[in-house]
Length: 231
Length: 278
Image (cartoon, rainbow over all chains, first blue to last red):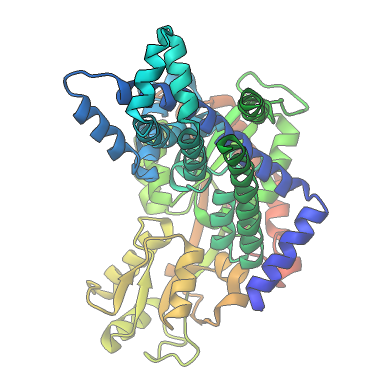
């Protein structure tokens, strides 16, 4: 068993005793990645729906650009965000570098194209005949959009799941703009990196197990909602 | 039903967002609370900062944000005024910043030493040699050597020893990990290679490694840590009062004593030796 066994035992112990530090790190992870997902949905779903439905010059290029953004390397986003937020950077006056807000911004930049890209695909996958028949009902533009998004809801929930999964698991950007500050910007991924560099493999394994559990719980909940919506 | 699902998701994320945004309680309230400290990975990985920072925060009410990076990056951040206070260990690289008055209040805090560690079999036969001679022997034997390669204080020291030995290290036997000290030690352990490390990180990780100290104790292996604040006259945005308080705190007799005590219990010997009075 070795480190792995000890790590899992440690994870159970930390959870069972509700270790305050681990609890804080876990809740911070949820807070940062949850907020980032929320923002990315607010940006990504409308953008995706627009790109799927509108017909304009350069639309193909715009969709390619979104699809390219789905694979944005987190460290690149982290570096970019860091450069903007440093004290003497363009947005330095905000003074939010090394805070959860900075991490939320970076993660939202990572997740927004993912959500938008999935939304484009989901909306375009709605049967065109259905689109026409909705239009034939004589609905307003807003109602049309709403009905269409409802039809595409499975794909859109998949977008949320992918967005959340993308940010909760990344470490590069969080490390760079958050700074891994204890009790403030330390999340499960950055805490794991730190414990590995300290040589505490058991604790690192425990933190990883907790991250997997957390990620699974959220994804399972969203999947449950998605599948119930499928009936 | 679907509206309900959407509502649940919405409430869920809003709750998450709101969660944990509540403020922290603290005793005194300085004007600018936030203090950014750029420091080396060794002070973080050895656990020293986890002991000192909470004490400083409790005493003064500042909220310290320690950013653990290599000394090279820490100094670069100081040079641009991006941080308030520095705790680094490369006197030769720090000197130009002091001379240019980019940093002020430059105070010696503590020292420990670098050691050359390697596999117990010691294929290059360096045990007990002075550092430069040991490096010469490693190069001559083409024995595997792992360098930090990250412009950290330890990396700068390593390069200085190669210069002293008159060797330009290159070739298959000389590899750069590009990572912090802890990770580099593990790479060296896995590959049965030599590496230069600060004693504190080595002692803190000894149990996982199987590497032995082969060279120690000569003058050029001294590892000196200085604390300094970024000059507020050059960079108006730095938290000058907080930085000054941190410098004073680090050299205060009480903290000097806790630095000397740190690690004694766990490793049987101190990891750092206080020397603010020197």
